[in-house]
Amino acid sequence: MTDHIPAASLAAYTAGDPHQDPAAVWAIEVHLEGCAGCRGLLAAQAAPPLRALLDDVQVRLDKGVRSGPAPVRRRAWRRRAHRWAVWSVIPWTVTVLGAVLAAFLLDREFPERPSLVLLLAPVAPLAGLAISWSRRADPAWEITSGTARAGLELLLRRTVVVLATVLPPLAVAGWRLGMSPALWLLPSLAFTAATLLLGGLVGVSRAAAVLAGGWLLAVALPAIATSNPPAVIAPSTMPVWAVAALTGAVLAGLRAGDHRFG
Ligand SMILES: [Zn+2]
Image 1 (cartoon, rainbow, N blue to C red):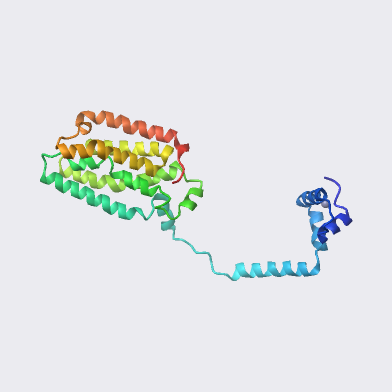
Image 2: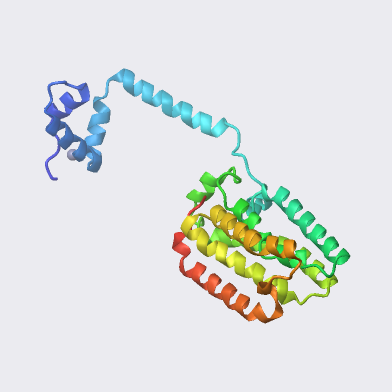
């Protein structure tokens, strides 16, 4: 636009003349957005009380910004910690450690019964996953979900923390009971991968609930009730678990776009 706003139109606009044509007002505003010269004229035409008020506000804002309290600095380690976990996983951690310890003690007392450590291993990480990826458990979820890192990357970081919490006690229990590490590790990883994959479709919390509930009802409870070790966690099934874990992890990675917070 080469023509500037005629002085009369600008004066009518500045005065807020109610008889102005809306299309003309719109044209003036479009021109003002792109023309510093006319913006200067507009500012110069503003009524003196308005200019005084604007100056006053600007001075006070400047003063307020300079003399106000310094921004609260969060400690770097706390900021980093939130990238990996939420504090609400602590009660869950205590529960899981207690459950593994109880399962270990019972297994040691009753070695002829199906191993509770093995029945617990596949579902042990799931509650942690559900909590670390839930808007109910994370007070900062709105901020978290608004960041560019929200999505599979953040979920994977938290998954790493969950596994790092759950796998060592299972490892110790398995070692003290003389089990092959594959027996508890592979089902655990397969269920974790399946939760991530299914979580992309129905939400991580729901996926964890469905998978954990299914495992408990279909495998763990019948095994405990009948005292027969479940056929699905025998050494011969370990290659199947390994393939399931790998496939689940690859598919979860391919479906990374599915993940939204909550
Ligand atoms: Zn202009």
